[in-house]
Image: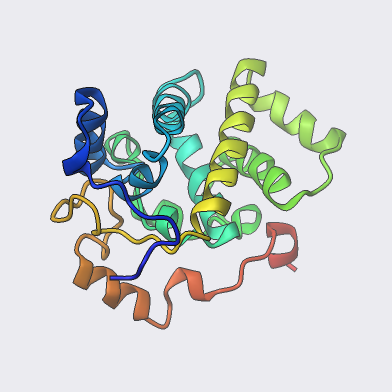
Length: 219
């Protein structure tokens, strides 16, 4: 087991019933998985700030959850947050998002896998993540497909998840270390500790490929 840069709070030591229930939900449903929340639990306000934001903005909210899930994994692939990138939204899967839908996110502009509405949201995520210019062309495209409340929510969500992922990737945390034995929200091939190790050692493992913005990748 790798050693995290900040220690995990052991859920067995948690006395707050609501916090313990949230840990159990993380193990059962994931996104987030319990390891990242075991870091945030050092500061209960931080734990609940993230849990509540994730529930209200990512899982619920005004924008299509599947769109937000694609943006979440786009960020993971861009900033190389393996902890986040190896999770999948159960809600998105139940709504029809398939594993193949994650495969071409970095090259979304040139891909035939995504429709114009999805590509517009991913271009928004790309501009935020890579600090690209956000001129009239992008905003015309966004307003064509989304209401202003949807644009607020997607933009806020991308900013929140990007910041969290850039932080988590520094912490040396890994799945199956807290409340192990559950596979809620784990990506195919990452459901157990052994499977995770095999997948991460594969030559075509996604994090071994250096990402670039879609506009550069398509050249």
